[in-house]
Image 1 (cartoon, rainbow, N blue to C red):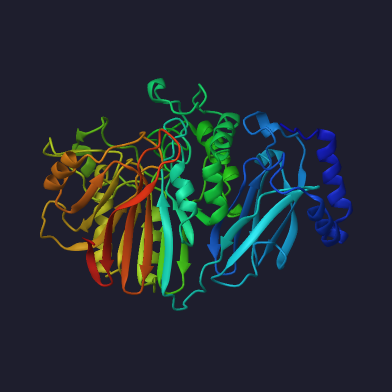
Image 2 (spheres, rainbow, N blue to C red):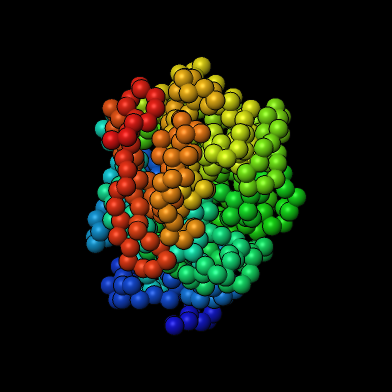
Length: 507
C-alpha cells in the first residue's frame, strides 16, 4: 500500500495555493503524467448527487488508509482540484476549480457545480498533485416545467457489509437509469451475530465520530458500491442504522447523534446546506424533473415522537395517540405545501419505512410500531390530504424491512372497498438479512390479512422505476444470492400504475 507522507501532502497544498493563477496549465500537465486508477488518496472512490437542472454535487474523500484514524491523512487541509466535462475522455472540460479537504470534515470534498446544461450526462474527476481519482459520470435534471417523456431510476436500501456482498450495486451500475434513490441504512452501526458473518465488520458498535468514519470507510471501500456511485448521481436519505437501531428524534443521546450526523454528511454527496448543526441536520428536500416527476425526500427518524410500544410485533393502543407524529409539524407542513403547489404528473414521497398497514397474519391487531402503523393518526392526516387535494398520482417509496412489498394506500385499510389514494413500493435490501427467501406461503397469509398488499418476498436487490406521462412501471430486480460473489440478477415481478388511476396492477 502506498502511503502519502505528511510532508508531501503539505507540499501539494502549498503548490496549489501558489499556482492558482496558472491552474489550467498545471492541471493539464499533471493529468498527462498521471497513471489512471493507481492512486493512494482516492481509495473511497467518487460520487455525485443532488441533481438539479444546472448542476449537482461532486464528492470524494481523501483516505490513503481508509479504516485508520483520519483515513491515514495528516491533521492538515489539502487542496483538491476538480474538473467536469461533456465527454468521458475529459477532453471537453466545461468547469474546473479547487476545493479544500479539511481535517475536521474527514478530508471530504463537496463541490457544488452550477451553470451546466439541463438533462444531459457529464463526467468528472479530482486530483491532488499528480494523483487523480477515477472518472465518475453524472447527470443534470430536466429544466423546471419542461415536458419530459421519461425518467428512469433505481431504488435501494439496507446494505449490511457483514451479511453479504454488494453484487446488486454492480448490476445496478449497468442499468440504463438517470439516478439512484437510496433510502437509508447505508451502514450498520453495530456488529451482527457472528454466526452469519460473510465479511468481517469490526468488533465494535460505532458511537464516536472516529468509529462512524471507520465504518463508512469500510463500506465505501467496496468496489461494487464504488462502481454504482461512479455511474449515476445519487439522491440519499438515512434510516436508523446510520445512528442506532430504531432511534427517534427525541432520544437523549445527542452526542452520538452529533457524531453520526457528521460522519453521514462527510460520506454522502450532499450540499453544504445539509451539513449538520450539532445534533440536528436538515435532510428533507425536494427534486423536480421537468413537468413529469417531483420527488419529496422525507426524514422519518429525526423529528418523530418515540414509538408507542415495544416488541417486534405488538398489539398497541398507543399507535392511535393523536399527539404522536412521524414527520414533525414543520416537515409535515412543508410536505403538504409542496404537494399542493406541485404541477408534476407524478408526486413521490421517498422515505424510510412502510406506510401502508401491515397486520400480522397471526394476530388481530399486531403491528410493527416502529413503522407508520405505530403512528396511525399522523398517517391518516397524510392520506386524507392526498385525497382531499387530489394530489396527482401519489407514489410512496420505502425501504427498511429487507423485503419487497407492493400495495395500495387506502383511506381506510380495514375496508377493502375504501378509496385508493396512491400506491407504495417497498425496496428490499442490498444485502441485509443474507440470501433471503421467496416466502410464498407467508406472502399468501399476509395478503389475505392485508388485501391492499399485492406482492411480498424477501429476496435481495433493488427496484427499477420507469416513469412516463402515461404510466409508472416498477420492476423488482433480484439477485439469486448475496453470501457469495457473482450472483446473476433477474426481474421477478413487474407492476404498473396508470396515470390518473390509483392502485398498482401486476403486468
